[in-house]
Each structure stands twice: as structure tokens, then as C-alpha cells.
Image 1 (cartoon, rainbow, N blue to C red):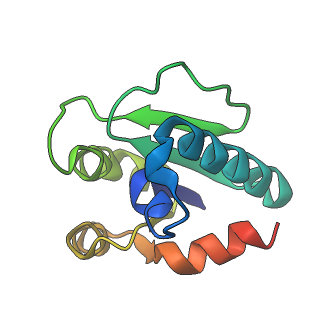
Image 2 (image 1 turned 120 degrees about the vertical axis):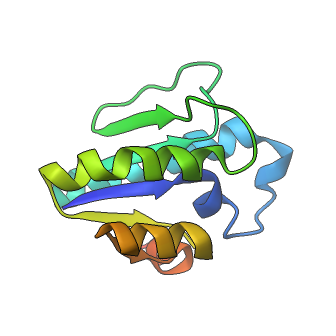
Length: 124
């Protein structure tokens, strides 16, 4: 199973002040995904709207960013890459964005809501 995370959607699912330090919030999510991936031997891809600055250290999590900026850039990147990912494995897209969820399901992926997935991460 390949889990694809709409990073900012997952970060934004909890109003914990993430907007005051976006790079730190992204790093915290990456660290949580690294632990989750290692615990269950999950394949994880974290998708961002733009390349993080500075580059983030990853061990188990694939980090990708949108090739074209603009509104919903990460969503578009997920949908662009989804057919390739689905050729290789079953895919679950983690998002609470209704449009992305609907299009991901139509492409053949499963969808997990951000809040429910966040609870899994918090349980680690």
C-alpha cells in the first residue's frame, strides 16, 4: 500500500498555530510520517505545493512538490502522478479536500480523511 499525503491539507486539519511557522509544521509532519512509515513499513509520499527551503532530511518518506505553482498545486501534482503510482501499487490519498478525494477515487485510489489519519499519527 502506497500512502500519498496532501501535506498542507493534513497540516491545516488542526488549528495548532502551524501558520506562524510553516517550515516547522512541514518538518513536524515529515518526522511523524517517518515514524509511521517505519512502524508499519508503509510506503509514503508527502506532496507539497513547492520545494521546501531548506531541503528536508528524509529517510523513508518520498518528498515531492508541485511542478507548477498556483492554487491547488499539490492537488494537481497528486492527480498527475496518481496513474503511475496506481500502476505500481494500491494507493491511499490522505486529504479532506472534496475535489481531490472525488477525483482520486475516480482514478482508482482509496481516500483517507485528514482528521482520521492525523489520529493514527498522533497515536505513534
